[in-house]
Length: 347
Image (cartoon, rainbow, N blue to C red; front, side, top):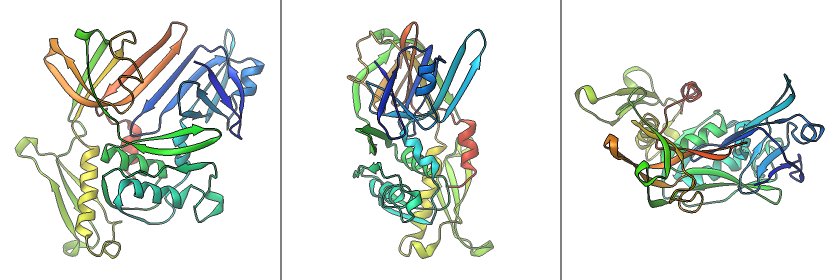
């Protein structure tokens, strides 16, 4: 595996030959990211500049160099990090009110086309070398968004629909591509010697089963719908403020739009049932052949009497002097502080 660096024109300018570690994190519903620590030689300092791109020769995605820090202790080192190219979307907001109705694939195309692609109405907002690969995903959207960060909106829609998003780099251009991971027949288990260590996480800390969604209007004239349910102590309620949804934009299905907003919120606050494990690369399942990011697999911990079927939502590749290791997250991970703060911005 070679670590390749591209300049601001997306042209290959060199290779990082020596580094202390690389953490390359691929995510299914969200933009991936990376961290790299290398010796601060004249060559690496010339290559690893803000605005350049870094990629692996065995991966379709590449990273944006968004942060760089040079330090000197016993020796001079440089640390860089950033999102994968899907992170370009974080540089835009949804500038106008977008009414999304229909297949998710078309809705994503509408958002991107109006806010960042070459078809964006405002020329200064266009990234000419960024395009979108249209896909029919078979998931209907009935929503409205305004003024929120574009990446957060796209990631939220994908997570609610259990759809993946990635940006493929090819000959100097980037193609944003939604996709649905495949089901895998293989089983991950210590009994099969394809995982080395394991952690199961179950949580109802950020859990909801019922949503009261408030739409337009004031007081008794305000429109409300209810979504979900639950019973007794297993009924967890949440209020969803959807005042931004206006009936004039949904003349034949305003309450359906409110229900969609509520269901999307409940999907975000679903029961956490996740499994983290370091994968044995020499086991019976081969990375990127038998399984990959987005694959739905069975995970069994026989001694604990536990079994789940879940997507691989995150794959973290770690490279250091000891070689490569892979850590995987199966299922819905715990909400991060960033996720919780971002939720305050509305849906």
